[in-house]
Length: 196
Image (cartoon, rainbow, N blue to C red; front, side, top):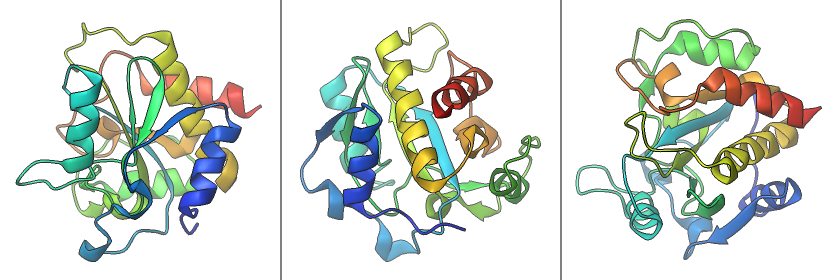
């Protein structure tokens, strides 16, 4: 069980891991904390945005939609490998997911198949949206994959977690397909190697 890092510690962790950070507005205080608790945190969740264009993607993830207010994540990872911090605290990114998956993340064991949506993921996961159309054809440039690896490793390092604390949205919530275009198994291998 881990309390979330402070915003300052979060920023330091990312920078210490070599992440190129862009601070967007008052990201430290932009959150959905009035809708429920933030923490304890247990892992890092990776998403794709189904958008094109960095500026529009960052704006959308910061502000959200009419029926899904922002922030939609903590950081937006654009194709150039920069990480745009848009919120800190509870964010509308994970939604309801499988309690068996959460137990596996906490225990750092292999993930079971997600077949339920009964647990509040917005409370328990740091979330990163990655600029990509999510069609399986839009490329994932190496600077972007490296940034995903670095942000996940940074958070795991600060909390003393292994790569098993890094999951994709598709592993958490039935019916989700993101991130699409690389495997979470391959990303966890990268995070594991970086943590060594």
